[in-house]
Image 1 (cartoon, rainbow, N blue to C red):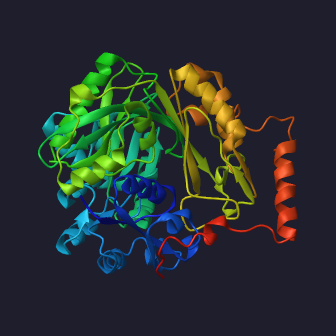
Image 2 (cartoon, one colour):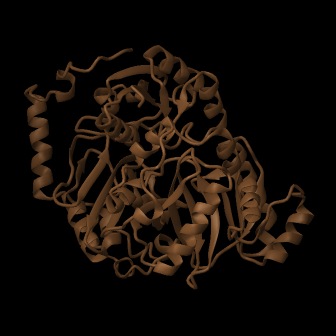
Image 3 (spheres, rainbow, N blue to C red):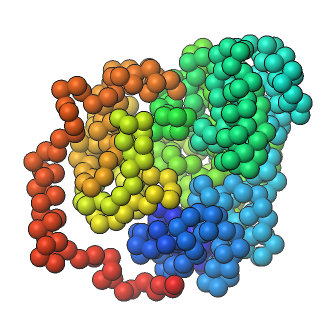
Length: 493
């Protein structure tokens, strides 16, 4: 097995990878920018190296710096986490060229599935259900109009290299199409350096359901069931759960088989996710493949007992899968909430800043994947996610009740966050019933606002006491950073 790996990422996912690697007896190397000098992964890793300024373009996205650190530290492999260079085919190729193992698929699979037009064509050839659309090279105004009429309105305009809702427009009427295409191209060019777009039929009442897959380098591929990811704001996921309230045993088997087929079609190896859109009549269509670990992977781990990070590392080392499809079991129900430093009542505006005090929930069936602590400043340079709150219960009702309790226990003082908003979602009748799709937040936006009887979010007595205690101790110089007192870990700068 690898003796040392480098984590080419930051935040909660870097800490998540460090923990699994340490359990495997593997030493870890963290990297950090100016903004992350005091972050938890830097303090917990066996080694940590400075790689540049706060801007990702000057640090986490500079492949040459990461390779340099890997060589300097003696790391045999690089785990990219998610985001940044995790789905960058050129980075995968560079690692191979430099004799460093990339913990993920090869460049060909990343390149094929990373371009949504190429991925659509590949899936169509492989017999995977694909949303009706148009993806050919001719993108003249006349051709776009002709194809949109064939598909039928409403249609989605999507960036070929897109993700996270960028370069995406929903068009209800023909008169708005060309302007939407222009706007999508401009946004895609700015975000991804590629302004290629394509058209897709808009699926009414869509459910966003994805299947986790694992594939080794010996041709073995399995799926580990589905995740329901339909609670989204601005096309970005907020809450995920497994199993999906929409799913049937028959549909799970059919979709799971197609997910495996999709992975095999590109000779995939590693952990990946096949994403589908499913309508109310249970018709399903391939949406895209994420050739990396997903943010929401913990709920699959909670119900399957499989550590996906450990599996990624073993696969990258060349080992065969130790579990067959017939051995995959799903126990209970798990839900994840993404905890963001943002203001949901102000169009989800990011709210970076210093955390004065944080108290995370605990107890049976609760897991928090985070990286912050009291006194840490959430930087403005990256995604504002603070942590992921994951619960597991014997069934969906049990998991929903446990999540409500956990959200009530979660205290973060010093900046705006979405915890009260998430709690309101878990009190909403449609969510409780499991009757929701990707339009949920949009449709029930008024229901999810702060009640009109509240002029502002009030702190309870416990929160106020914590707040005052913090400042009293700070005034008397008794607040210390416990992590700085630990000198057991070798640090490099």
